[in-house]
Length: 242
Image (cartoon, rainbow, N blue to C red):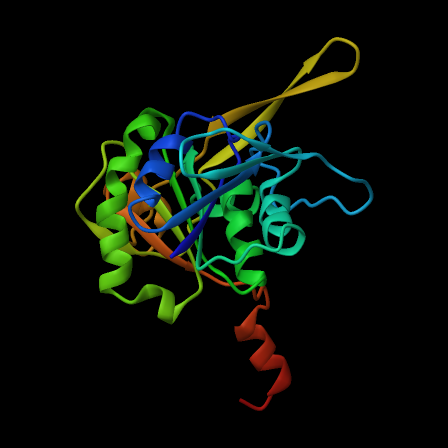
């Protein structure tokens, strides 16, 4: 199996090597990741200017490229620019959960969307900063769960979130609501500093990724889709008599 690893924390982030070492037990590994942190850059790509991509020494037996652009561009460059072929893209392990509506902002998840857009199976893996260093130890059980349930034959893109401390329990989920927001602190010289605040509110449902990870402390596994159409409304508009 040919595996591409990327992230939005940067190629030298602390969580990269543990994931790479795990992935090497599953196949041939290539790393194409941002040169510097690209958190919350969403699905931004560069279309107007060139950007740097250099081969770097990361670890033995792994080809690695440091890219001066976003995670989505890392996937695009690897497949469209460097003409590499992959069976799987793993984006992560992210230092911070990617749950609820934060998925909109996530560079980690956007790399998965880009892989899916280019026809490659992909999964994002994220956890809390408190469990970031140790999260790679969950990869065996996550992979076993994906394989046992034939998930990539059912859907091309998946978003996996690991609670602090890990878990042996998995739950299929759907996207929850906001769990983080920002206040903006005015500073001198017309500057504003975004300051993150917790706005999570527990729901009465076990369907949401937010509750699964933050309340029930289980591993959330959520299928993703590229189609942003409101299908329910679309069907009503096309068939008003129904």
